[in-house]
Length: 306
Image 1 (cartoon, rainbow, N blue to C red):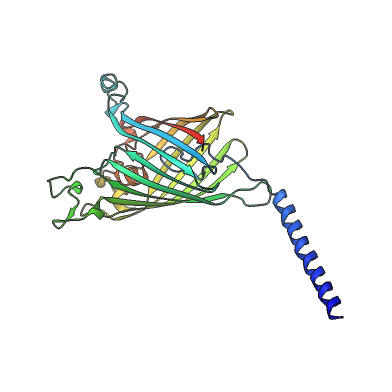
Image 2: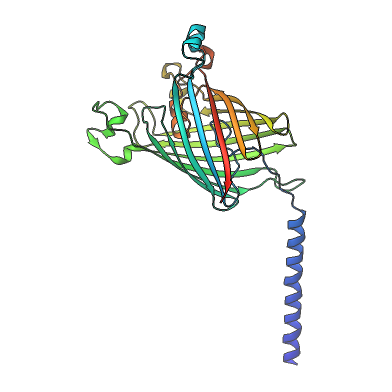
């Protein structure tokens, strides 16, 4: 009798677990994920919610040139050839997809703020994916970076590039960090929107500045054709100094075009931010769109399967 009871219970448990697996499999089959909320892992300045697929290596080259028309004086446009004679920032690097939802990268940029010659380590993890129908309404990802300045120390003790506080040198003063949360939704085949709460921390700042800068990135993509899209982004700071007219800071704002050729993603943009990395452009943008202080930028991204 006990053997029969054991066999009966074992059979019931096996059937139950089998039923659960079948139900889960059916639910997973019903889930249709939304892909390519954005075409690239970055919009213009702001990172997007997208991550690389497992085993993909993304090689990137980015430029920010000089002012297109400084102070709206057209002679400045001709003498600098639309700003191409002056490179405000240049960057190159690689990103790699460890899993479909986790990517890491290393980048080198010239730097456009007081700290230059920047090596930046990055990581991004996508923990929610938008589904079609009544499922998950949006995608979410977290991204972080560590930037280290490798420039020579300045002999000017009042400069941030001296890497000294009260006369004491520390390697930690070369470091800056960023942490972003990306929340994005794709509305059909045409419109994508993203909000990105952001925290930038700098170990060394000027006496009237804050180590921690909290801001909100806003990004959008309008898909015009299958391969061409219009992209926009801005970063709104929650910092009194950067809203003050006396501070001299401006909101980083960009608009551009994105072309997907299959293997390459090419971006051509106009932005008032000189820096490329968030630890650079968020705290240091001082150029004013209204005074013609914007520049041409472009990014070339090429993905390889490793």
